[in-house]
Length: 294
View 1 (cartoon, rainbow, N blue to C red):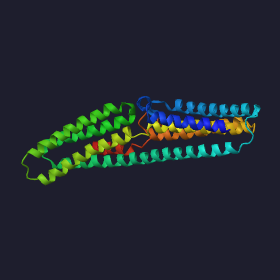
View 2 (tube, rainbow, N blue to C red; view 1 turned 180 degrees about the horizontal axis):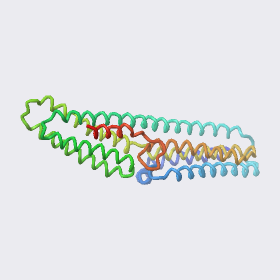
View 3 (cartoon, helix red, strand yellow; view 1 turned 180 degrees about the vertical axis):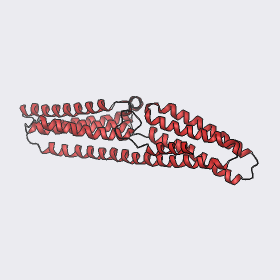
């Protein structure tokens, strides 16, 4: 058992030493080229099930092999190792789940803020000179339509993000024109310009939080390393007692994989067609209907 514990410790420390010293550039390049966002959900789930099952089996066979050679005597150190590694795994799982749920709530809040910002801008378009109103309102409606089309094609987010920026630029060009004109109601027009600024800000915030902010790949790597070590240790403990229950192994692998899928799906939360848990876009759909009726 002492040799097994020493081997695991050296491997774990070696991975972090490699990542933080001479191999950091290569490690960062490898991690940046892989992302949980690029994997379909079913591949993530099946892979995790197999990783857990294989680790449990390897740990079990290792214990049986060492016991046949009379290398190990009691399971006291094994219990300690399992408790320690499972505690670390539980901490990382709780951390990842907390990050994804908080970000999911943030995305919902930003959606409502953007809907309010767009509707406010549309109403304030009535405050600008009449010759600009029709074009600005058309651009705003097109902006909302692009948002609605994105709901049905989340994989085309880059295209619709660029389309949104183009419409923002069109509206902003009107704002610059108004700023250069000598208007009697300049203070009122400034409200419109402020709403345009808010629209651009909300676009940047939603894109950043929704697309750029993700659980780092290094955290996913650490999570899977801990899963591997914890399942090896647990399988080792089963092997000491010669209790290999395949039903328990399968249930354990399915349960862990379900938690991983939940975290990964919350991390995507609707930015992919394969997402299960999505931020409801009904407020944007309702806004589209309201604008069409005006």
